[in-house]
Length: 197
Image (cartoon, rainbow, N blue to C red):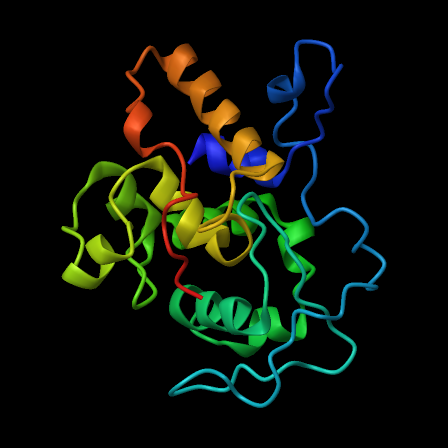
């Protein structure tokens, strides 16, 4: 969780004092989107089953919070399941930049909640849920790489390892070192995993 969320909110750069991984948790929303310019995170219509999570005019659903919750269906699902009303965050997504508790609740919720066919990140990192035959065939095995696949696999997995994945792994290694826990070198990356998208 700490490695992934530090990457999602990083403010580090190659020559940053203490190294780039000393600079997690710098931004509470997607860089460059605070003025409402990132309008591409709206799936048209009502993509949610059982409740309305259609986009609200004038609102944007870019990445906010430690896990950079994005897209109207994720805002709506969290708001429906945790707050009891999907429209609360759909009408006011910027609550995630002004309410730190709510912001972290979204990150923990995303980490702990499976969204079929994906397991939760928590299940993936601790190996709680055995991969299906389809997952095994797609190279989707438990470990840190699988959490990257769940979070952003469509852009970062099943392709040559890119700088974003390397940054995620470096943050993970940093926290593992601080906490003095072993790192499973065989499950760090997702380049050989088919993404869920």
